[in-house]
Amino acid sequence: MGETWRGLYPITAFVRDALRKANGNGAVNALSPPEETLLTACEFWLAVSSGQLSEHLKTNPVRQLLNAQEAFARIGAARIASTLRATVAGLKRANSAVPVEKTAAHIEEALSRTEDEIDELIAQFAAKHMGVSFPHPASGR
Image (cartoon, rainbow, N blue to C red; front, side, top):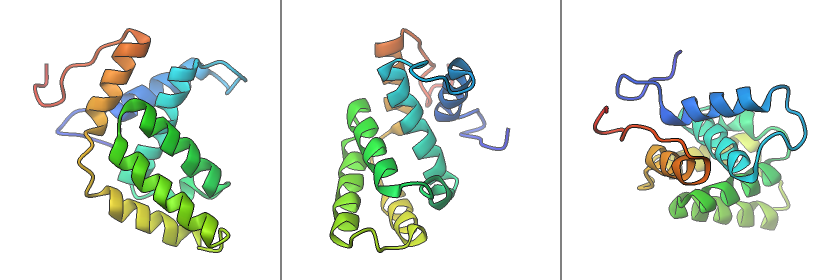
């Protein structure tokens, strides 16, 4: 796999892949609400961290951003949720006339400085709501 994180497979990618597999062919309501929250957060964060956010937002960017904002708020990433909330408000004021590429670049730049520990928050949310646990990223255990 191309994505690495301190020499390991990132928790966000691991959780995303596991949830996609659990979801099978995308059957309606195949995932529980906490699983949907995790999948949304993981897919969005991986798009941001890989520079693929504009592609991720091509279909209905406002809806995608609202879904991501809600997911990040649920997992406890308040700064990311706040950034996305402000972006959505700006898009609504501009009547969505801002190009997706410009919006994505703005979000990627803003989130590159976030202090939210996404991998840790995802692992904590998964442990709390789905009964799975991951080693602490910094310990490698």
